[in-house]
Image (cartoon, rainbow, N blue to C red; front, side, top):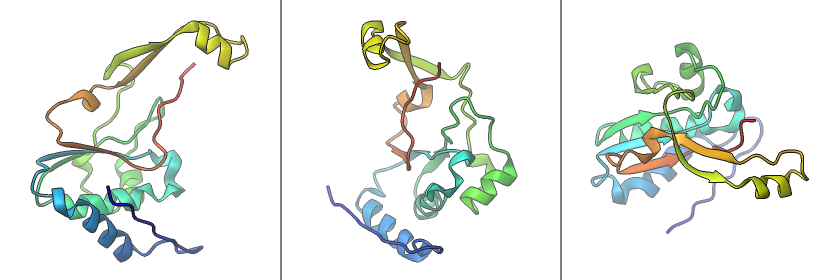
Amino acid sequence: MKSYELYGNAPTGIPYEELFNTIRDGLAADQGRIKKLLIIPPDFTRYHSFAGQITNCIYNFMKDSCHIDILPALGTHVAMNEEECKEMFGDIPFDKFIVHNWRNDVVKIGTVDGSYVGSVSEGLVTDPIDVEVNKLILDPSYDLILSIGQVVPHEVV
């Protein structure tokens, strides 16, 4: 696996062209094999993460060669509206965005044992915690799923 490093400077960050070229170099070898792509960036609460620009570059490089869905990692936050999507993700069409419905679109993939929860919470919580992800993450029709930025599972207690 090849690694890439880009360095930006305040306040402009990494120039779009440099970011796009790096993403192109990283995805070019697989571009023809990827027919369906799921991109999971953070939502608008992480606007300053630069994930919007990264998602935009991936979308614009891959859009002519595969189907792309974008699932902002909302967790339990309110869904992004069209204006927020445009501000964060630029020229990506709004119909490419899928709203994560955390009440109905999740699948349980495991459980964190209550004894472990108790040990890491110093006894504050001792109940087991279900581990759930959006069902699209388990959809075998996606050839590639990209998690952008600081999208990590975390507890909702």
